[in-house]
Each structure stands twice: as C-alpha cells, then as structure tokens.
Image (cartoon, rainbow, N blue to C red):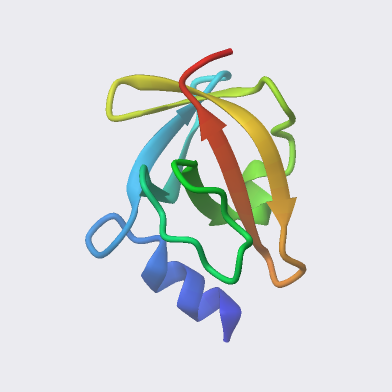
Length: 93
C-alpha cells in the first residue's frame, strides 16, 4: 500500500520535484519552502523536503541536494518509520 502511495505522491507528474544529490543521482521529493507548523513538529521558516527513506538514507547533516537550481544543505534527516523521511534543509552550509 505504502509503495503504491509513494509511487503516486513522489511522481513528478503529480506532486514531486526532482532533486539532484552530490553523486549526481536524482530522486523525487516533495518540496516545501514555507511549511505550516504541524503539531509543533516543524519549525517556522524551515525548508522541508519529504522523500522515500530508501532514497535518502545516506544523507547526513551537511549533505547537499539541488532543487530547482538551488543548493540546499541537510540539517536533519528524520525517518518516520513508515518508509518516508523528512529532510530539514538550509541554504547555508
């Protein structure tokens, strides 16, 4: 079920955008530059990318990804236990 949902949600024809990792590989992410605070879990003004955990398991603090020609640095990589990870990003290294 999650796999089917992930295929739909992370499809660039629907909701996702392409992100390029430091090794030049590409993944699909949901990108939000100004997320709302959801149950206090996301800080105001945070830049968030949501991705399949299998695609971002190697990303650690300081890793880079490029979205829309802009380089972002990973501050946090938080798997939610369901196969999805929330990446908190920054434009500053």
